[in-house]
Length: 229
Ligand code: OAD
Image 1 (cartoon, protein in one colour):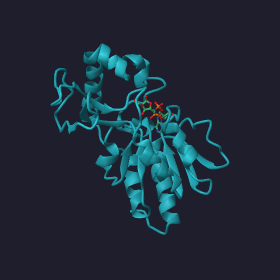
Image 2 (tube, rainbow, N blue to C red):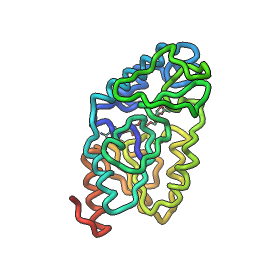
Image 3 (tube, rainbow, N blue to C red):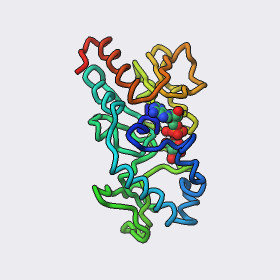
Image 4 (cartoon, helix red, strand yellow):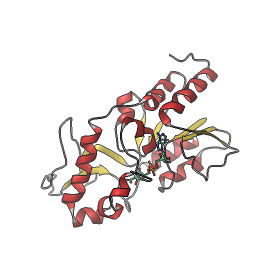
């Protein structure tokens, strides 16, 4: 399970903390349906900036290590991130809990989704065939998280569970760790380890994702009898 911290070393800011995205903006003015209804131009500008930034960065060793882990395990990535760095690193099974920045969707019909492609942006006045303004296909505060229904069984079936770079303060996503069986081997990587994870059950690796993830992946592949490439 990954959060904004895994993409920090690619050059994308996290949400909370010093220099976090929500530090410079009031969350209620950007990431809510009410904000979009009130000031769509400001909201689209914010997400267009994110999109522009995303196109200038690349996966880092943490994303690449999780792809590498597939050599020994069936790896399901549950990410809260709206970036596509796991896909670009080559991971085959990626579930986005909070949507994807590279897609627009109708504000009238959540099922009407289009890919923006390499150069597309969110445009005020761009409508779906039913007259709904197109918006980022991301989950805003106060909106449902439909992919929780897919994420919960993945957590319940896990033999191993790794959490990388999330403050685990946003629900329902943060509740996923409660679905992981007691018997599963669990680890968390973060420079500031989330406090509420029981340290008897969770191996805490304090540090940066790009450094710690490849180390842990090497160890897990070793345990699975696979030589790291
Ligand atoms: P946060 O910004 O809340 O937390 C980022 C986490 O990454 C923190 O625990 C940092 O300590 C950690 N971190 C920072 N640098 C790191 C590094 N180099 N390596 C590893 N970890 C590092 O981001 P999320 O937990 O992802 O949702 O936030 C959850 C949700 O809140 C987001 O998906 C977004 C946001 O509002 C929506 O917009 C719906």
